[in-house]
Image (cartoon, rainbow, N blue to C red):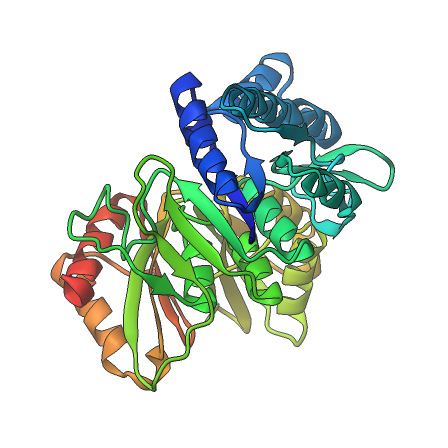
Length: 401
């Protein structure tokens, strides 16, 4: 007997037929003698619909009230799935995030998990019940509901698997696993039988939409074996785990991220500590910075350029303009019409031809590079958003075609 955590996204429970399809998958797993905890997202576009409803009322809702609103989506999903399981003859109980023991910090709409009190989960599992948990949500110390941000249900599932020491955490999606590129864009994309935590983390962070990057971080930290597989097709998926490899390099995938904006602080004083002042200001507001480029300006100044998520761009620009005099800067500029395209694979730094192959593919397709970032397992470039799909196709063909 194993303890298995299964997570199903919004598309997997979008309507009655899909809810019963999920119920059959869960029931089959339980009937094989396993203990099962299920984590479910809100149905289909429910979260977007709730956000739209808030926008009808105000353009500046408080984070607390948005979390109160958004938590309703998962409450619908877990109750409907439990009803479907009951129709299949299974004992099941639904729990909201706070009932399942999720304690978070107070950062509304992007809360971080502080701990999971597993007492209720253990109690319900011991009754041989299927436990269906609302993903994406928790409660802070002041008893306010919180949400974990986009993709938070993945994080909820992995956190439960870690806290309960589950044998495996299965993430069910509308694709059959992790591919070398988005199969809807790249027809030659191939499904990977396995991938390392580090490679998956890079792909998730760089725009691949199969797994949330926070969930992969948790899985790596607590050594939770993940399996990504389809809820619509009973086929083997992709295993995400630590994989021992001989020395060498293998490209695992190409990813794009169009949810990115570039920001430039021009004319920053060329004195020690200016970069620290810029990025510490952003860090205080939990704005993550990715690609960074510092270039020489005029008259002993520097231009500092970097990328942030598009959703953080307005706040970042407002903050920088407010403190521009502190940096000695002259102006703040931004561009939303950019995209980040990346190639991921272990051992890149010891293989000199990776960068040249990638850049040659972009050159041959007349795609201009604005920023470059490298690490041991990835190379990312910032390009025009209109060129993103062509870039993915060209790079995938160069390495994996």
